[in-house]
Length: 136
Image (cartoon, rainbow, N blue to C red; front, side, top):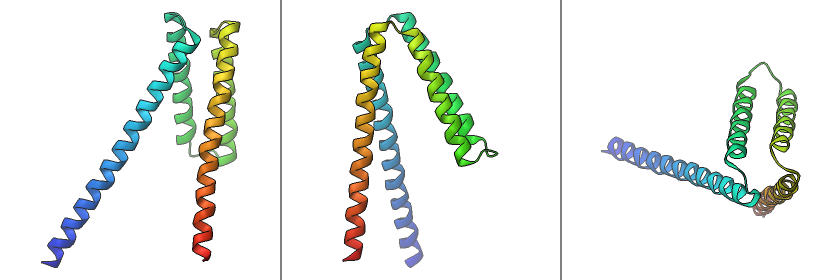
């Protein structure tokens, strides 16, 4: 009887965990789509520009995956290659955009950096609170 109860609880726990991960992935995907639509609208991209941006981002994504899965690289080498890949992406995007769009994109990127730093800062504050609670 105890074994059956334990197995049942493990299965229920596993389902909750899988559901939470699925929800998180859905939220991330939805957020990325919303960001792309917002960027497209703010920049006023043409169909050709939109297609080029899509190709550039796909190439970037593939490059990042290749770097992540290359077990011969050290962490420092991965970071260096990742930075180079991001710079290449930025250069290609700027080649696609008009000067006015480049200025808007630069501003949009800065705002995104601020949002990312804020999220990271909030996490660090939460970590500090957790450490203080552990000490008490």
